[in-house]
Each structure stands twice: as C-alpha cells, then as structure tokens.
Length: 434
Image (cartoon, rainbow, N blue to C red; front, top):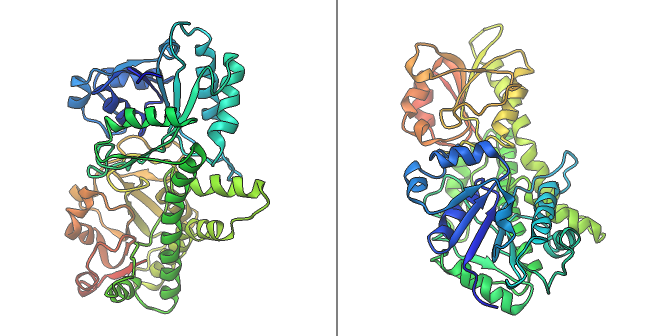
C-alpha cells in the first residue's frame, strides 16, 4: 500500500477541527460535518468553541463541507465524533454508528482503481469497539470486507481543550492498525503532524484500552483527593494545608479536589466498566471513584447552605453568585458541567442564584433556571455568598475584586483553592474551600 495523499476528517468539534487543520498543512484535507451552521461559521472564520483563531482558519488550505461525497475516494478517513454515555451510564454509540454507516454508504461509490482506504477512529471507546462494532456496520453498508476492501486503524485523541502547551504537535500520538503494514502507514501519516513523535500500540484493542485508562487514572486520583477533602472537612481541617504538608515527601503525587465534569473524565470510565461487565467482572474501584466524584456537587451545595445559615447575615432568601459555569477553565464547553449541577441544587433551596461566565458567552441552556448576571465586577451589587467554581484566567486576574463582591459577614466558597484564606477572614468574611 502507498502512503495516503488525501485525508477526510469526519466531525469538526473540539477534536476534529484542530486535527483537520493540522493534516491540511501536510495533505490535501477535507473536513466534513453534518452541522451546516457549524461549517458556515468556520467558513467565515468563526470557531464557536474558541479553540481555533480566525487567523488560523483564514490561512488554512482545509476544505470544509457538509457533502459526504468527499468520503468516497478519500485514502485516509479519520472519525472524530463524540462518544457520550446514556442516562443509564452505558456507552452511547449512536454517533459512532452513524459515522460508520455513512462511510460504508459512501464507499459504495468509490472509484475502482483506488487502493483500499484506511479508516482511523479517534473517538474514545471500549477495547474491541472499532473492530467488533464499527467494522461490521461499515461492511454491511458498503458490501465490502474489512481487512481486504478497507482497513482499520485507531489513534486515540489526546486533545486538552484550553491548553496551548499540550497540543497535537507537542504530545506523543498513539497509533495502531489492523495489520502491521497499515499500522506503519498510520504511523507515517500521524508522524507528519505529531512532532513529539508516535507510539505504535501492538494492536487496535490495546490502543483503545490505553485511551480509556488515561482518563480513568485521573478520575480515580481526583476521587481520592475529593474523598480526603470531605473527610478533612468533617475534622475541621483545611485539606489544602494537609496536601501542602504531605507534598513535601518526594513520592507524594498531589491532585486538586473539585468538580469533575466534561465529556472525558466522567464518561470514559463507563466504557471500560461496560466492557468489563460483559465479561462478568465488575470494576469496583473504577465505579467507586465515579461515585465519589459525582457526589461532590451535592456535598458542596449542602456545605454552602450550612455556612450561610451559620453566618450572621439573617437574610430570608440569601443571594449567591456563582463564578464559572463551564466544565473546566478557559473553555466554553458546558457539557456535563458540575457547576451547572451545583447551581440547580442551590436553586432548589430557596436561594437567589446568579451566575457569571464570560468564557461560556451565550451558550447556556434555556432551562438553566438561574439568572445570568452580565458582569458583577462593574456593578455595585454584593452577595451573601460567592462561589468560585471555575478558575478562568479572567477571574484569577481579579482575586481582590472577587472578595469585594461578598457582604461583610458573608461567605466565600473557593472550590479551586485559589484565594487567600487569611486575607478574606481578616475582612470579617467566612472562607471555605474543598
């Protein structure tokens, strides 16, 4: 097989768009998405996810389209669609199914003189999914045979949204293929954009498994620190002080307790536990970590209520300002945001809840139930409690101003341990952090 010269990336979200732009610097590349509005915005230089600049889009040679015909004769097809979980915490593969079926349908129109295409999946999933779930869908839709008429590869995405340091170019890329020859070709193609290098996994299932455990490990580590924080709170010990002391030992690895949201860390563990349960094994530790992290929002809401009631404010309906609503700093994505969960829990307790998040812009769901306050830093309004939930850079540059937003005797809840406890308490205000 010859090295591919044409690339099609299916799905232009947080993962697919940067990937397609990177490929376009080395290959003739087309980015495909079913969302016509998304493609139109990108054609005008607007990335609603705020991950790619207008300048980068304007100088790119990337072709953008909603026409699936671009798939038919592509030599290298990359699938970068979301893989969420259902309400029952099982893998939601409907987008992966749709993408696979679309590829199969378009391969029916493939020119006969072309070599078999290589189809590489980047979407996070359980070990075995690419070959056991996606391949049969493509085979049925295309009337072709996997391993003969088309070949599979898997290269797990390692995109870290909002991070300018760990990018496609600077992070080692794991690659794999259905055969050794295909794996070598996948390695060569990705090697042109992954300047930090590539690592060839022994097979596709191994590459799939490696991606899943990357986020499981982080989920479990954060869960440990969240549980420690909840224990120390009951002991009236500030967890950050404990972690500072413990971190003086050379082999202590520190993590920040807090809300764990988004569409990776709280989702990926369920892909492995699903596959594990099918084999008759319940992944107790993995699920225990998920349970701990899912309870942090409720624990925080109850703590906020306790602190307000114990203060000298005396308001019949205390006012709360929540700073930051996205699932992580400096990212506009609200999917599975635990700050949103926290706001809803507080609203159920007869509290006046307002929130401010300039990074999320106008992407808030209509049913959020709490009032969007435009910019508390330019108003004269103060609150009985302010919760710093997400440490966006815009907030970290205004730490003193955050303290000024709280009434005398009021409460500051610092979920990211970014503020100075001594300074806050010296002003007659209550400070609490996880």
